[in-house]
Image (cartoon, rainbow, N blue to C red; front, side):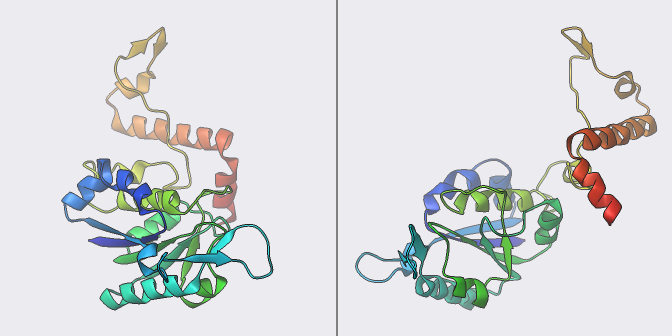
Length: 230
């Protein structure tokens, strides 16, 4: 079982993604355990303060080191983590390869950034990996955490009903997935490619591979260049 702890400022944002669909079924099967902790429970004073102004001035607030450190230390006291991950726009971009790697871990801790981010000393002292889900800024890291957990969780053996499904996804082999079709075989004058109706498994796989190459070449040529560089 993969255990994932999430340290969040707005934990309510994560209630929906983890209470439905694939991730919910994964928890019911005992394959995935997701725990969300409210950082404000570690805040200081009557108002449970967790942020303050940045030294040097400038707009925006920064999450303070004390509440974060207290939360991390308490959680580490209960279990050890393979990775402590900070979700931040300036981290390396999350991809399928990273999802594959993380799905093989036993325990992960995700820290959701907020406001102008977290005190740099927390990154230096505790964080082992940083992840961005794209070159844009969200209000907080909770939605990014949901994306990462979904991408990781579906890779755990037994989570998907079709074991080969995750292995056939786009990016698993640095190629985009081929076109897919379903019934009816003809719709508004457009027909499903004959090879898919042939029942010839080898020819179907060959067609799908050729289509993946062509689609990747047209839509994401950077993936092919990455493969050539490797």
